[in-house]
Structures are given as C-alpha cells and as structure tokens.
Length: 350
Image 1 (cartoon, rainbow, N blue to C red):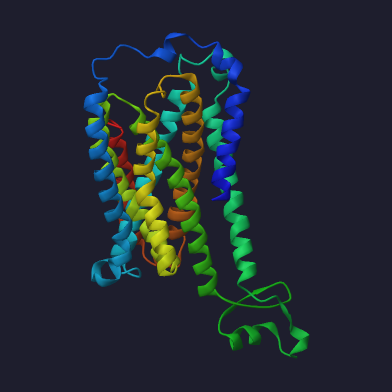
Image 2 (tube, helix red, strand yellow):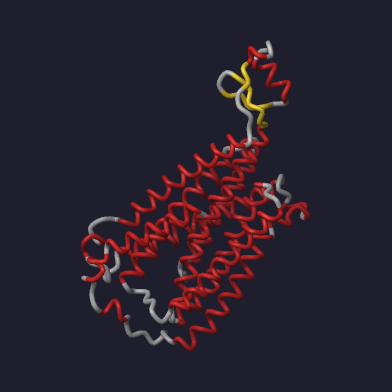
C-alpha cells in the first residue's frame, strides 16, 4: 500500500509541474462540448445501479474460487481450476492491452492537451514500460524479503560432517543455496511466491479499479454509463475470479482473504462515490483530468500486463502440472486466448 501512496504523490507533483502546459490548452476543453446525453438527473440513478451491480459481481467473482474446494471440478489441484485460472489470466491480460493502455494513449494524446510536451513524446508507453519494470523490481525484492524472513540461514556442511546431498535428503527435499543447507522446503518457497503474486496483482487491480470508478462516477453522460455498466460487471466478475484464484493458492489466513476480497469488491464503488462527489467540478476533457487519469491508466496497464504474462500465465505454463501434459497446455492456452478475445469484444462498449 505504501507503493500506491508513493505513486499517487508523484502523480500529484507531476501534475503541478506541468501546469504551464495545462494553462495553454484550448479553452473549450474546460467547459465541455454540447452533448444531448449529458444529463445529471438521469445519470445519478444509473450510477447507483452501477455501484450495486459492480459490487455484487465483484463479490461473486472474487469469492467463488475461495469456495471451489467444495466443488470437485474446481479443486485447486485439479485441471478444471487450472483452465479457469488461465481464462481469468487472459481476462487480466486483455484488460491491460485492450482497455487500460489504449485509454491512456487516447487521453495523453488528446487535442485538449498542449503540443509541448504531450504530443511530442509517447508518455503512455513510457509510463507503462517503467511501471512494468518497477513491478518486476517490487516482485523480486518482495520475494527475497519474504524468503529471507521465513527461512534459516545456510548451515556449513563441515559442521555436521555430512555432504550436502545427504543433508538435503535428511531435511526432506529442502532447497540448497551456496555451500550449505537452507531449512525451507520447496512447498514453503512456492507458497511465498504465490503470496507475493497475489499481493502485487491486488495492487495493480486496485489502481485500475480506482480509475474506473472515478471516471464513471464523475461523468454525467447517461449514454456512456449504460454501456459501461454491463461491460464493467462482466469485466469485474472474471477479474475477480483471477484474483480469487491467486488468493486461494497463496493460502492466506481467513482474515487476510477477507480483507483482500473486501478491498477488491469495494474499490470501484468507492471510486464511483468519489466521482459523484467531484462531478460538479470534474470534467472528462479537462487537461488536469486527462493527464492524471491518463498517467494512472498507463501505470496500471504496465502492472497488469506484467502480472498476467509473467506471474500468472508464464508461471503456470512453465510449472510441472502443465509441462507434464501437452493436452492440458493446449486447453489452458485456448482458455487464455478466449479470455483475451472476450475482453477484446467488450472493448467495443467500454
């Protein structure tokens, strides 16, 4: 969460530093264009419907994997769960490529922004690239810290008068690093990895959810809201399944599971409430809004794309379960491709 606060602070500071460029933007961008669909009285009930609908579908999506232990087809160690998880990973990948990143490019290349610097440099691509690299660093460092905190240091072989191979056998298939034995099992290491993946993925999704909620709550375009409700419900349902699967594999305590599910479920509705509160002063096409939301979208896109490709799909496809079955690999690849295809179709409306 400290990372989220840091990024928000940097974005606020960055927005203030570019204020000279904002002031030179076209005047009509601050007042908005004439649009027959803009009706605050009609938009407010639709926003309330959106809050209830997104809250419900998000809750169903993120909690359904947590109860999959009671469904034989969706057991965490079964093929069905793996296929569903790959489909959900495809949903997250499609979200990054087909929704968040294009929105960022569109906003940061808007005619409402001054030519210098916004039309002279691809800020959306640059921020997404840096976001992916920073996510990699956070992923790696967090894994190292967790591993170090939950393992015992190396024990010299000479102390016990036994060779390393026998020592590994005695402690029960433990990892060995350097010239000693580390008392941390493969299962422990894999569990720690799943926990880091779940937490980093949650941060990336929360970024995206805040931006979605704020944009939806602030707009008074009733025509746009109607299309967004169905698209976002579908999107949050399957994104929740992907996150819920990661939470389940991480084997957190029940309290942590509840908190992670709660934050995912409530972030977008809270963003909508905040957007409603700011709707009187917020303008979709104002330079300040375009820059802030555009940069947040780019940051979110980099995180989601990295997590979907590296921590979700690559981890599963290179794991022992899929490597042991070409048939299952084909099924999972098809499921991931279907998830991407679904989000590509949804991109028509949202």
